View 1 (cartoon, rainbow, N blue to C red):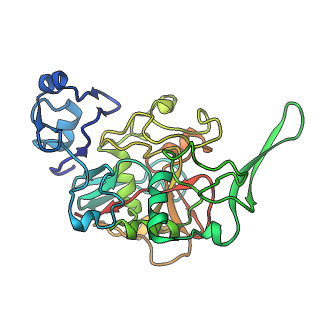
View 2: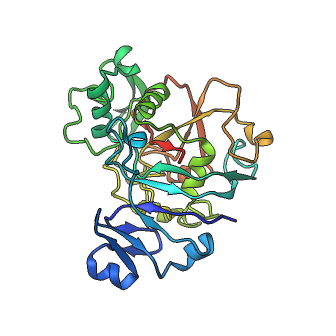
View 3: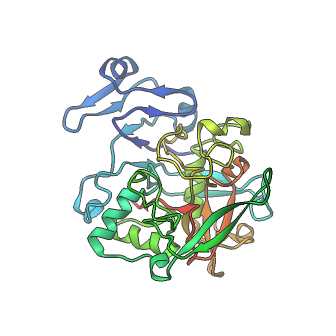
Length: 335
């Protein structure tokens, strides 16, 4: 059972899979939102949806972004970013899936902030401009890209292959660039690249447990929207609807916590080391991941994976130095 907590969002339209909230003045007043004249955000005082009442009891969602403090925005990277305060609570981690996922176990987590969207090219560019950071793919002269080739008039094949010029600034390595994709998730970043960004932003990568808890948003179904995988296209980009590419963040419906692209679009790096047997002996309170292993965990599925990988419990591991065009990240922060 989840404990009391707050949901943080933005003054923009706040959607969930079960109800759409609008922030125009008339609708906000009708739904019981109170305007904060200082930052033009709205605090919902009344009329919680029934499923949120079941989850949060007497708590109330509050609408705003990162507190504008020196501590949380010291590098001017996430001061304009919108984040969600994920409430303290417990959940059953794991579920239907591979052998590393099926062992369900109770996990208790303290509250934490999580970016509302994956880190975009625009935000990563600010980091690079401010620090002069050079990613692993740039240092090593390329990264892994999904290459499609036509075998015959009716048959295509695809495989991951290292492309010499591919990096976050030119994901295909074809000189196309990202000028028209600044609102897409940044890709071709290694675990170390993602970690470096988070540290610069005064944040950290989320743990695997935090990520799954955030995906679920208080739900217990295989996918956060329910048990019908055919509904995936309303909430995520996967191989069925992505046309083999990333897409601007925030274009699909969010989950019950107000998180966008928390599944689909790109796999997202977590802080944990990958251990397929970790669930057997993982601690109940705030698990931080295995102490052994060299791989790192990714969560959420991506634009080139089947929609079934959008399950809340789905997990994979990859080399921390791997840079490909299906992997990105978002930041977390301890309150």
